[in-house]
Image (cartoon, rainbow, N blue to C red; front, side, top):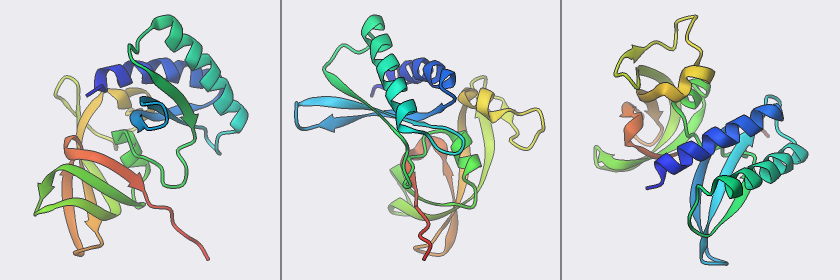
Length: 185
């Protein structure tokens, strides 16, 4: 719905986050019942974790930039937060980063009669860039942090715990995905 707008916002936020030693995980618009508007939720992180002061700085600066640029023409509240332990997975490069981690994946269309899968991310393959060319995540020159935004599709292989089978899911079919926090006792 607002994919192009979110992409522009992510680009602005990424420039601000880099200055503070952070990176943007992703952004999403969510319903906000208290004021009948929406919340623009930006998830930011840093290697080793993000601090509250970093989140505050990113929020203040991004708020000013969004006001000046006037990209958003409807009522919204800006929220900048860490991705948390049940981290939302937005980008293909994150599926690569989180190989062998458990995730819950919800789809736009059913596969074998199901919209939801829970299990381990096994592999990411068949990466396609904006020109339609295949990209290898295994090549030493492939910098997924910088070129990762140019990758527009891939196949995500997941071992589904519900029916103990592997599924290959196209990134374009994924509606939402979250890591599942591993509990240690």
